[in-house]
Image 1 (cartoon, one colour):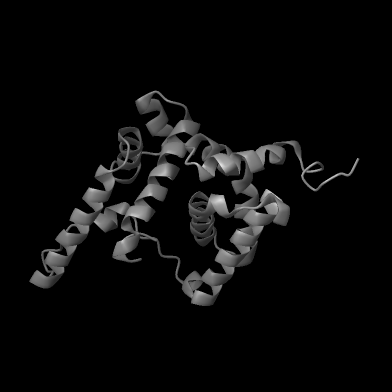
Image 2 (cartoon, rainbow, N blue to C red):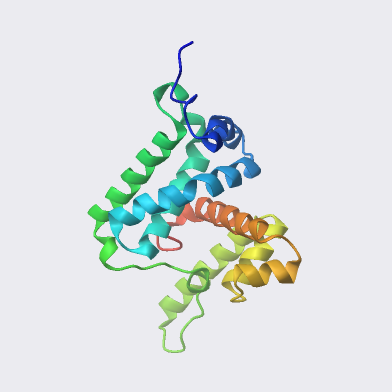
Length: 199
């Protein structure tokens, strides 16, 4: 009997090809399971490369946004799921290092996206801020209710994920999944408007 790389993979990883196939069909539960099982390793790899926790978190999220979008392109004959994830992570981390953005760990939060216009802002800036806020409101409106609720509590209400879990009476893992999925959908919805809205 010929052993393959998949046969000798750690037990959790043996189901990853199936999870990726389900993700390619839009299965959010499969995405959540793959994320929960693989992201600690991917985050650790990225952190060693960029040496900044906040940037490592951003890059890791970018990796899984790419997984969600490109799961259908994964081919088991070309390598293991972990090998695929590691390749994506290294590529994203190298891109970030080359961009020079690692030196300034900047994250545009949803609060900043919504943008409350400054009293000192000129009319052009105020108009731009209103347009940005409207774009974000429209993007939020397309989210499923439960995802939008968790995201709003986290980013606008200032609640921790544990507090959201208690307030909504749902498991902490469910809160994390809803927020992850909401962020992925927001990134996709806001992508046509440029990187300035959400990074």
